[in-house]
Length: 289
Image 1 (cartoon, rainbow, N blue to C red):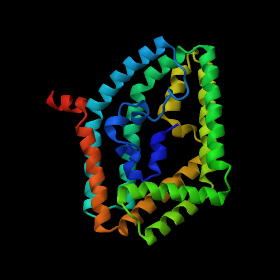
Image 2 (image 1 turned 135 degrees about the vertical axis):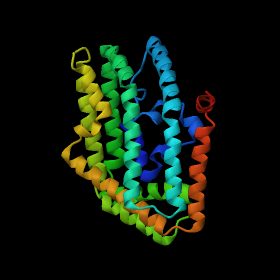
Image 3 (image 1 turned 90 degrees about the vertical axis):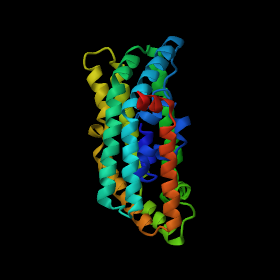
């Protein structure tokens, strides 16, 4: 369910910089930016539920802004120093990635009680609609990412990465484009494992929600939202480890081949993310308080 993990494939180090998906001021008003799951795509909430949800969302956003964003700014500082000092190494990227995962998990734990309460209040019709939405999601992703031939998947993956990296680094050299093509080729049929694992997670989530009034439900949802990796299929666990390693290798090599202009553009983009965070009213209020 994680959009952050999808954005992680852009370049690992940008995962907490909102994955190059949009500007912070706009994106921060969307729940899926600050938590590794989103229910709003799959649930048709009634008026009472929407009112409750919006109030809880305000509380979670306030908590996140005042307690979590300062740590993100520190994280961006460490990222910036890596680029400025030309110390973009596999070990450093692993550390930044672990820090990002810890931040995501902390936020997931914070919002899990609200998710449990919302899910327990669903009626059977809403649960059926949620399951239908899951099925539609699976069909669309199969169509977009699995149905094309493997060569086409590799080609499209490389094109998506090249487009994203051009946004962060500027025009890429021929050598950099070749490295991206090699990265995409090395991932092979990763799309198949990713989609299969997503369906596996959704199936378990649906099974849990079907028993939403049982005593075990809260613990089950916490596992599904906070400890998702424990439920991964063995095949996806292996594929994901490879995906992370390949992404780190790609970024290390691209930065090693980067020009001063590209590094300056990347630093400017990181600074832009920092400015967007600093400009949030809730963070300003927290600093003044």
